[in-house]
Image (cartoon, rainbow, N blue to C red; front, top):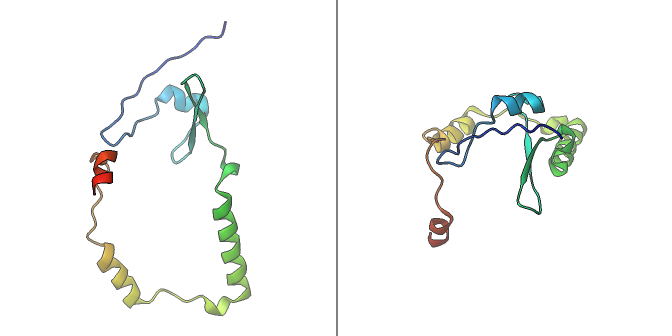
Length: 112
């Protein structure tokens, strides 16, 4: 019979959690690695390391398109102007994100 290790983790108000160290070691996870949750028919959830090769295919195609277009038309590539950079900063510079604040309930989203 195979030995099973059981560990627990707590969800924050934003439904985030920390992957326990023993699980990170077993899956060889590092910072910024991706994980996959697979919901089984019996209700169990299997956590595995996501393969980098399974990246979003549309993103890869879009980045490939951009690379070809830049190579074909390098004259269309321009530096971001100081005016545009200032405009962007004025639109988002004061935005504060609190990663610990709870997400709104689904019921609240439907009402708004």
